Image 1 (spheres, rainbow, N blue to C red):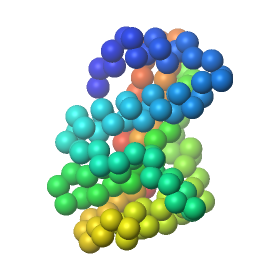
Image 2 (spheres, helix red, strand yellow):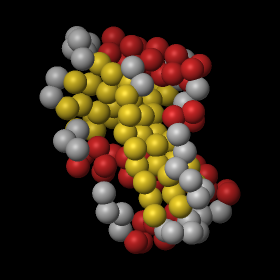
Image 3 (cartoon, helix red, strand yellow):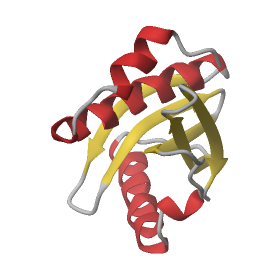
Image 4 (cartoon, helix red, strand yellow):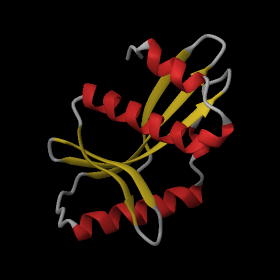
Amino acid sequence: MVIPRPLIGRFLFMTNKENKNIGIWGEDLACRFLEEKGFVVIGRNYHTPVGELDLIVRRGDEWYGVEVKTRVGDYFDNDMAITPEKKRRLFKTLKRYCFEYRINSEQVFLAGVIIGVNKADKKVKLRWFLIY
């Protein structure tokens, strides 16, 4: 995926006070990335008492709850950003979403998008992976 320079520049010069904006930027980027892969974004930031799903996306009969992690550094962060406890809460949240919206599909998955930003090279890498 080619990231327009203004988006990278805006991200690279954010202050620590704007960490929430970094998360929003990452979610926006993940939405565009997934749409390019044929997914339809159904919802964002679904909250329950147990947890939150950053994105709800669909492709055909498949439904996905997606956790987005944006990391800044000179390396591309790995799946360890989503701990076993976080996975458990995300799965419970996804089950709640399916119950609430009467999604009867057998093809419901939990997935993640990790966004790694290399400030020095002004490059962004995205990785999509299945959790469950």
